[in-house]
Amino acid sequence: MTSGVVRRVNGPVVEVELNGLAMADLIEVGRHDLPAEVVALRGDHATAQAYEYTGALAPGDPARSLGRPLSVRLGPGLTGQVFDGLLRPLGGAGTWLDLDSGRSSRARTWTFEPRAESGQELATGALLGEITDAGPVAHRVLVPPGVAGGVQNIRGAGPCGQDEPIATVGGVDVPLFAWWPVRRPRPYRDRLRAAAPLITGQRVLDALYPVVLGGTAAVPGGFGTGKTVLLQQIAKWCRADVIVYVGCGERGNELADVITEFAELSDPRTGGRLTDRTVIIANTSNMPIMAREASIYAGATVAEYYRDMGHDVVVIADSTSRWAEALREFASRTGALPAEEGYPAGLGSALAAFYERAGQVTTLSGWRGSVTIVGAVSPPGGDMTEPVTAHTQRFVRTLWTLDRELAYARHYPAVGWTGSYCRDVSPVGAWYAGNGDPGWAPRRARVIAVLAEADRLASLAELIGVTALPGHERMTLLGGRLLREAVLQQSSLSDVDSFSAPERTAALADAVLGVIDRAQELVAAGVAPQAIEEVDVSALVRAREAPGVDEGAAAVRAALEALA
Image 1 (cartoon, rainbow, N blue to C red):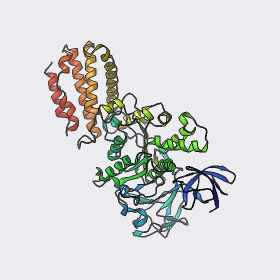
Image 2 (tube, one colour):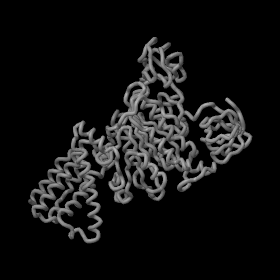
Image 3 (cartoon, rainbow, N blue to C red):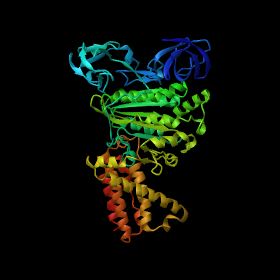
Image 4 (cartoon, one colour):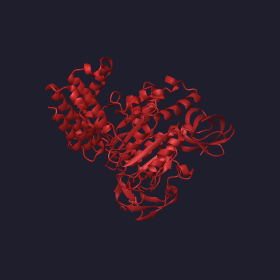
């Protein structure tokens, strides 16, 4: 370590005089050893961003270098806990953040089960053993990146302390816990072409705008449009092994509600608590802004750690807008040249670097693992052209735009079909075709076409009236309403409807499309459009909350047949 002094303090910006520093080095400043990261160098003078409140820091206070970049401590016990933006446990920070303080990874031993033998030659990333009491997610202990060779002195089965080495591989001690720089992606063997969808259980997402395993998605929406509820539903129901939920700059009471609800939710996969396979990084708006900036990188690093064990991991960042605001505030204090709306010129590059850490890979161990990133965007005033939203749309493969009018009409999820998109429709359609649903792609295309045409006709009907439209166009309007109410709308509070399996989603969509086809046939055969519009379709709408969808669809078809 090298020592120096603090020369100037301006909020989270600290200027120090310290020799031997490099960019991104971690230093400690002040009498309380506040962590800070070097962001600029001028000879023996450095500018650092502090990750704690600097109110008690003053010129002349000591500063020292730790000789390493900002890193987080990785090991068993991450799931089921709440951390701050630097991945420090918050279990003892107060009862409102105390999910289960007795599970602190630093205060217990772990049960190790070896999977390798002394004298065995192992490559980088090979399996050394497993921790059998780390929760429902299999925790595998691997040979660290950059280490390979013969195994020496591997531990036997039994308890292991956090600071005790598991084995010696190639002359290097392998610890149970290890540090990893948050801004450095963890290595892998190959990057795979993603095709399998991440099943979320939300019909509008799975049927129209899927995100692939290892893909990226963004959820832009104004205040009150349901971003947090949608993200919670994805966290609860998506078919992933581990959830990393990053509460980045959100209000403290809102994040407290999220943590409380996660602690109370049962996991539909395991029957236990949902938090047992969830890592929560809580960095609220009243916490230091630069810890907010580091939190999404900490979340990505934790996700890659579990990905390397062969798991599918979903990172939910709520929200990247607050993270970008931290970048803007720091840039203004350092005098950086501002770009659009005061954001730093490197905003686009920073967003790209974050979303690039998603992907489906072959790990160093030869397993398949993935990191899927879903980022919420909170545009001020719902302005979708502001810089964070605009840059995000350039880098994500799927966009779920939340529509204010749908939200205010109590249509959940309020994902609009006009501003949303998916760039992976072709590979996802091919995957469904090879896994028992060859009709997914044509069904999706037809649903989107009916919705788009219904929106066009609705605008026209407001000018000239519905009765002035031809019969087949009135049936298209009816079909758009049925698709919205019977398929795309979903209740997050219903035991039946909160999760919709792909088979159920396909059955609902096919039932509605079948009713639309029959209505068009009747109009073409001379049946009055008004007579068809007066048919009671409530049974079909209620089918989404019934165990089966056949009875409701059959009732509506029978009523239509009576008109023939």
